[in-house]
Image (cartoon, rainbow, N blue to C red; front, side, top):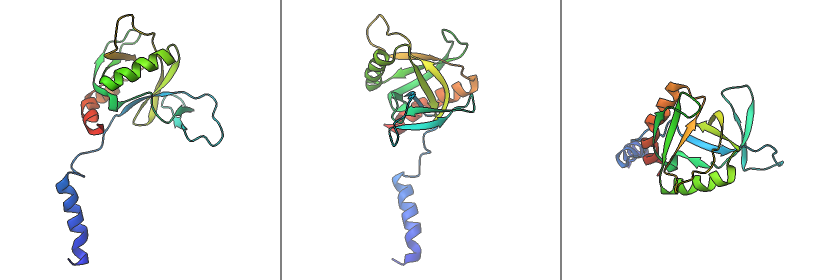
Length: 161
């Protein structure tokens, strides 16, 4: 095969396999532990800009909860805010969140969308009844942003798993 045709074959071959067929995930939600004191040279934390202020927050690079564990979302009225998101968790997400609630109850977590922190959210107490199938995140959510995040949840779950 002539070298001039190689890029075309590679491109169409990739398209035929579906490698370029799907757009990447959008509005990916993640909850991160806030780190107040970093260790020099530590690679497990990252400084992230925050939308609400001209400050950066240091968070653990690996999230406590991520769109990979969230099957669906819906916009609801919150307990303490007019707009909230209800996250419906898969089995792994339910286990992760139950552990996270026990560990971080009453402490703040940074909520990020597409790697940008939107706000800091305090983890509620453990529920009195059994397992956690869903959780509600009150925000200071912008309604449009919440609707966009919720609309992408199922698609993101499929793409990331």
